[in-house]
Length: 104
Picture (cartoon, rainbow, N blue to C red):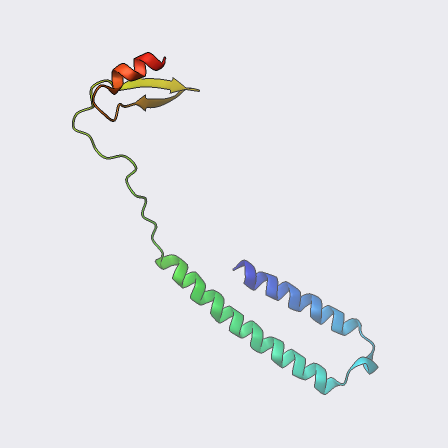
């Protein structure tokens, strides 16, 4: 939609610029051909915008599940906070909770 409005604005500025030109800068037939060509381009762009907007409505976004659902939490997990946001330390192998305590 924004492209369509931009094209209309540009065509308006172009038309204003053509009206400000002196009459000897181009023949009326040349100007008429330009108007027809620009009208055809606007029609083609309107059709393209309509197609793109229709395609945009068809797009669905699926957000994958970030964490697997756990029925039981692993032993040794710890809930901590950073700037008020919780995060979890979860050992990934047996005996790693002892290693984590040694690191602290």
